[in-house]
Length: 321
Length: 296
Image (cartoon, rainbow over all chains, first blue to last red; front, side):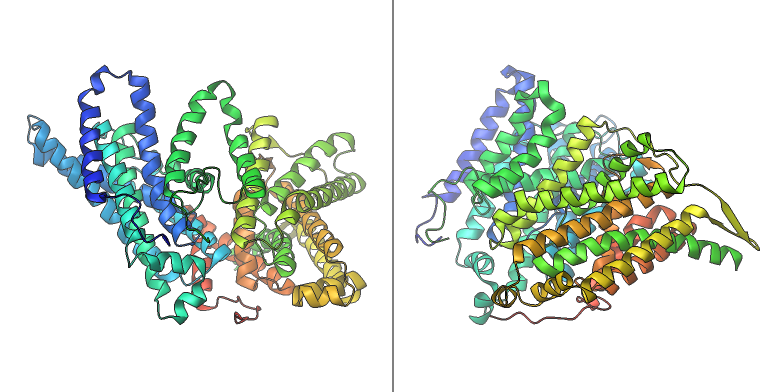
């Protein structure tokens, strides 16, 4: 941010207000049409995924194609926590709503942590590479993670995990979406966070003034993976069943399209794009089979016509980027 | 021992196909410094052109099979040139990331158009070449395997001749070495790049037909895995190097066939990626590649 003032006047107050708003929405969730609730939940999860990938692909300029892999790690880890640790913790009567909530929070954080560790293990060796190579290696890691889940029988193999308790509510989704946006924005707009943008703008120049660009890349990667893991946990406890096939290359591409459509390094645009791409298939239901064709055409046309993204508003963009 | 030799032959015939696809990646990378993600789908398109052409030729004859092969190669050459002309050329000189994203877009467009318009269910590829099996001792070599290795070797030899013995080949090498200097001495960069795309795509089409002969089930997503493997092969051999791509393809095909025949068969795909990651970590320039320092 070259402007020298924060994007929001009171970021912490904004976060608390957003979580309170999420709580209010969840209070009225019984009165909202389940269909809209469904779309909202999907949009919220996609916002978390897109905003976290934007930290890596947008702000730091490292092209990762393996986000779905981290999402898978988080989904499996948190589902394993609620499935295997849940019954002893909650007791035979199923526990109170509070203890269930606590269990879910623990499961989500465990999922996020597992994904972050996976991000660290993937990032440390591969972030030495650049551009095309990095994209390929992250893609490769995403596929390896998927193959591992397919071959581990304790986690259901190719059939995946079933019977995950339905803990995900609109409160959790909106709350974590707010948290993800908060963390990414505050991180990028902090003094430390300028390192991400410096790494993106000119790696050699950043290194020559003494920034450890590899470190910045790894931090971005780990934070991005953490939130992808959280999103995976929310997704698993929402769909109630997860399979390795659900986290393949196509899922990664979907997230990448959101980031590119929104404009890389433009959080507001990316949020709008994530919502748009969740709502669009619903609107286009009659032509659903053409959805992926439309996606791919969008990618090409945007790169040719508006390489900075569809939602390229002057707010929240660096002046001379 | 017989089993070892048998697996080796299977591995070499798979590797020869990887090598054909890898050559396209490596040549495009050589002149344009970017990874043509859509190459794997050109390979798929080649197999489909072959599938539809095969209806109009007598099956199981050498002439018919050759006609199918050449039609697919010509069709894909045109497709490759068209993709370059319409999509990549307007982005030339822009950030690499944009070209990469566009290439992914083209790849997805071909795959999903194929799924919607041709149907996602696999089709059986006809036996366009005469089929025989030769037995040497305990060893069985099918004519298809021999054909794959033979055609691949011939095409690689032709390619090597084009690149090292002709004027356009010299222009390709000049462009790969330094595009601006090549332009200064009168090389028409656009024409050379188009030619490179056409050549690479024709080789991918040949790979597609040969692959479909050995694994006669084709669908619009058939290119994804062989494409990735071939790309890994190109990096393994050193991207930008033509002998490297051929070598990398053979190594990867052999390793994969042996892994597939062992207890590790369900991990086959992960092994190829593990090879890629190890190579990039310990020898980023590949086996036969040269490392270039980045100049500021």
